[in-house]
Image (tube, rainbow, N blue to C red; front, side, top):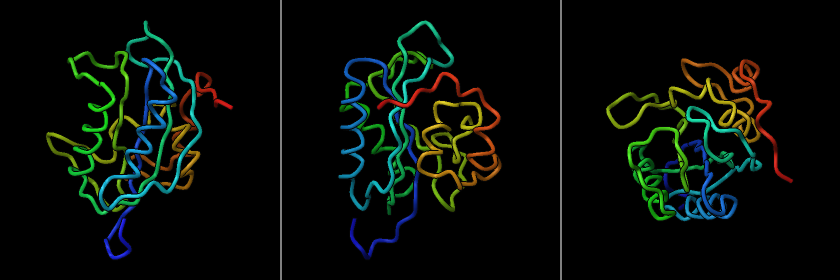
Length: 166
């Protein structure tokens, strides 16, 4: 990222439960750090988590990163989708099923958005311990417009299925 580019913090959730998930997440984080006008500035631990939604599948590995980026929300979303595709992600319409890589744009500082492609902050953060636990690693003080603070939201979910990896 160039020093002259205006940038804002953005938060991305990562998940995988197919293949070598730890390697896949590490490569995705590296790919985020190489995006134009973007730098990874915070990274959570990796967490083993139980599946959510569709439960008959392998456990997930989840993480969260903070990036500073001059990309627009839709440019960043497009970049996330390209990183998923490069990792072998196939979007076949199965919701909450197994996947090689899932990248969700959770929040961008100073931006609220709700259009056909993207809602910011992500509308289901408050329901998901597998997002809140890693997000609390990198942004415990973060306030999500219309939802509340990360720590406050984390207190309202059952996080017993989230285990930090060594």
